[in-house]
Length: 282
Image (cartoon, rainbow, N blue to C red; front, side):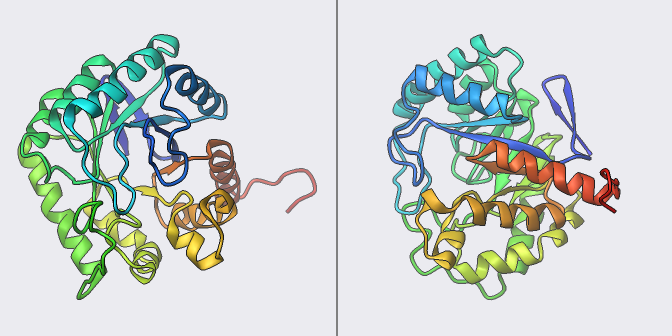
């Protein structure tokens, strides 16, 4: 399974790690830390040094309760930083986290190689056609509602069946628009209770039936922190545990705040799966 990232083929037979670069003042974990160009460059350098395969740049918070910001404000937050990152790290593979076609077009024009849309192309009717014209991979995430209201009593008759049906319809729409590489993200924490989240995680392998790579974003989310009764700042250990479960169940890309620890999980699971003997360890 490969992705064509503007001429570079990325092999997903080995899981990849996507580092998060939030250029927002209000993201749930690291809001306000990387709004300046210098801070964003330092964080990008750190994530690349730790082995990030992709870096996902976002200018609008999608935490529960967040509002949709103006398009002009989103572009202002992301475009100059994205251009600076690509200038300093020309080999970096950047994803743009946006639900707007205009923002996607501008950022891919500046050098991004992937579009990550929490609305799966439903917020902006021009998104799918735009991504198809840009010829870049598209991450389609499941979300019930929008960030402002998604955690206000989310309800499903059968969360697994409904998310599967949503993905089947979105994959058809993406293919019809001409998008070659579609990546599916179950949207942990986006319009789901803790029970819904763990049901999806337990059954993650079922989504492989749709023949699309899977991206999983679990990093420091409430499904970890509420169970462990810790704040997001103390949610790394739980994140590592759930990332391990996700990878064992078929995740191809894990989206994280902490790249070093995620790469260690990938390496250990690779060694485990290959049955490699290390020294006297059998």
